[in-house]
Amino acid sequence: MLPYGRQTITEQDIAAVVAALRSDHLTQGPLVAEFERRFAARVGAKHAVAVNNATAALHLALKVAGIGPGDRVVTSPNTFLASANCAAYVGATPDFADIDPVSYTINPHALEKNWLDDTRAVVAVDFAGQTANLPEVSRIARARGAIVIEDACHAVGGSFHAEGRVWNVGGNPWADLAVFSFHPVKTLTTGEGGMLVTDRADWAEQARRLRSHGIERVADNFTEFTTEPGPWLYEMQELGFNYRLTDLQCALGLSQLDRLEAVLTRRREIVAAYNAAFAGTDWLRTPGLRTAADAATTSWHLYTVQIDFAALGRSRSQVMSALREAGVGTQVHYIPVHLQPWYRRTFGYGPGKCPAAEAYYQRALSLPLFPAMTDADVALVIDTVLSLSPIPSR
Ligand SMILES: *Cc1c(COP(=O)(O)O)cnc(C)c1O
Figure 1: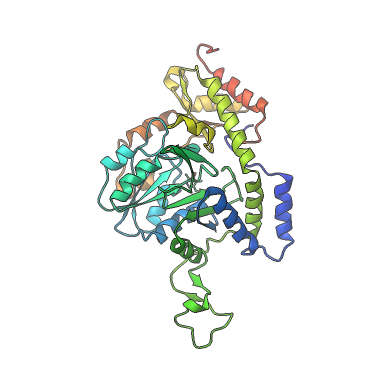
Figure 2: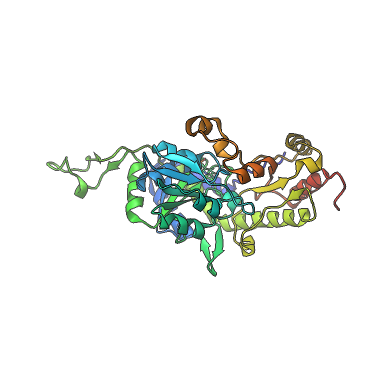
């Protein structure tokens, strides 16, 4: 059975984790800082802070930006829950702006049209790997005193074209902070894990403190315990968390980072093969790119198509089970977050708030995409999907 996504673990990855197990540190050893340094260099950000998952990274991003009660945080409804939940964690109001029908990322026009004065942050999600329209989102947000957090959980190692050149996901002038996930279905994994990147030293420093209980160990900064300074001293100046990533996980992350370019290339090859095979199918729409040149630079996490189930004469669950019988796993990304029961009950959101995301959801289906797929696996997916055609389309 081909799942819609899965991790790839090599012998090199295993050896790297075993070496970490034999070292003096299981957690908070030298590999955390090394992973942060190499990750920051790869994405072109000044600072990277490793944490135990991307949900924690989103929480810390809002904390260091000073977002809290009375503030509104707008994100895309076409995302995983965490992009919105983080706002509620800090006591702010999560809200949603509809998606653009080509890239399925937040639509800058919807963002601008529905802007409310209490909005202090926009969480722009790079859906499936395609970058949100960051220049436009940032123009709208910054003109109104709000910051931009790039939820780059889908897009590790990607880059995009804007203003006549190529920019990195997480290392561009429009996102004030960016977060990445290293969950096993994502493109680079540490089991569980996440990274927060920013060019602001003060935010990185605070995030590093908050990930470990708000503890400060630098003697120069002590305010209370100054009578007898010593190596045992630590001070807690603010309420933090245990959001640490371990050395074991960073060993895996470093090893995965070594192969990232090959992984991105293979993912692009599979996407190109799917796009070519499905181009003439009238009941299936392949993923649209806002900028055609991004085909060569996008870090594809998902291959999500739009299927006209009515034209096909089968419901989505019928299509999913027909594909499953042939060994092809699929998934739906995403149920619009504003339609989740908790969001309806807590904020009064409901159908009609984001019509484009709701229409998109009715037709969404993600096909298998992971770098260990063989050409035969790709051909199996293509043939099985095309065999659903009421009239054979080739
Ligand atoms: C996976 C994901 C997250 C959460 O990542 P975790 O590491 O599982 O906490 C947040 N946002 C998006 C868009 C994701 O896909």
